[in-house]
Amino acid sequence: MLEASESDMDAIQNSTAEQEDVTQSYEAMQQLGDCYSSVGNYAQAQECYEKAASLGPDEPGPYIGLGVVALQQNLLDDAEIAFRVACRLDTDCSRAYAGLAMVAQQMGDYKRAFEMYLKCLELDTDNLTALLGLFQTSCQMGSFGQVTRYLEIYLNMHPGDTSVMFSLAALYIKDGRLEWSKKVLLRILALEPNNNDTANLLEEVEHSLAQRRQAGVQSV
Image (cartoon, rainbow, N blue to C red; front, side, top):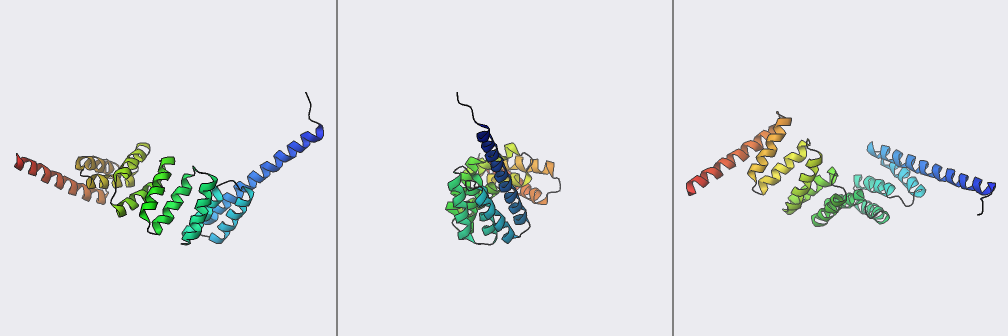
């Protein structure tokens, strides 16, 4: 059995140390880019993401950042290119699909946006941005079946999210499931007794249920 020489071991240790340094530098640049992006300093954010991309050429993260920066500046073509690179680097990158969906939504291509939001949610059912984006594009397209399912899945994990609960209640109304909507609205009011929008919608639902019951009695 051959043993590594002392110089070989030193070379391996140096290589490992260099790799650790590169990884740490990549992570630092990525985090710095996120910080600049969050405060609207897009020029500095872009510079940091580009440095991160050179340090981690196989990582999708910097391209997600570049896509977000471009999207914030309404540079839709640049944003799409960046998100597509992220998808190519990681075909299971849910954030990249969410980015492509947002680009398509802003371009008015609701069908493609819907497909990309669905792809994102297939990979990450916990992505609230994609969930709300799917709801918005569904309203534009008048197609709600798949949205309802993902809202229900999300609420199983986040039972106290009243904004998503309200969206689900509205979808139940569109689907004619008034009793289901009523149950959800009552849950919201149990958490937020002073939620006027929910109280008003509940009043409309109860009025519709009363009309439905009355029509049923009359038809007997």
